Image (cartoon, rainbow, N blue to C red):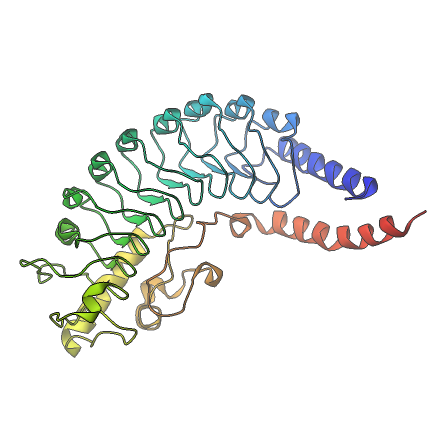
Length: 361
């Protein structure tokens, strides 16, 4: 970046912070500004509740960030952070935390002192294990740790009775705890692309379960006592690309073995199930933590979710409601219109300024 462009960008960042201080703004978006060091002025922005610092070049998060005690949302994903300050546990009001796509390697114990945390994303952070302290996050309803090197899941995680959305795909998980039924609020469980050899039967005792994704594992059979009859909201169990698909197996209307979708249940049951599932989705999904786009048939049929704003960029395919967001992006779609317009304007001007700066003598 040229010196001129860097000067303009840095001063624009400071101007945004100053404006947030003067206007006592609750939201401050500093994402995608190529920030390498968090400006010290930011730590005086005491009114801010939602702070977006993702998609920058930050390597160090100073302890001073914990002076922002009113923070409820903090996004640090897509940076180059290799450690977090132990004082992060002081952010007691934090509800949403995204530290994905950083080379952290470990989760410090202090993260689990965030007693009000509801959504926690640590995708692709080079984790080899999840600390058992995760069980302390009693309010957690969304957890994503995709693309790590996890081999096991601590049993303490299954004490999270409010957990609805669980995404652990693309790890090396070999077994799941047999106490998953304690996660009684579980709605969407994504375990695809792991090394599971046994079907996690206890997951079928979660009464609100809608989707169980087990494709691309090493499962060769269903349990003898496999039964889904009491799961009123269940939409699909995905077993594609498992050894069981090539072996003799029972057919089940909600179990998917091939790329062809399973047969629809009888019309009456389908209509009732669709209505109930749509209501559950509308009630459970939150603006910041919606992990997937619902089946189009729900959007078309149910006024409860017709007006919900879904981000299509977060979906890997348009086929049903099977996919979690790629990185749980809590991004600029949650800024105010005024903030968004300001950043878009700067984004349009900077390339043009860069062109002149690079040709200046």
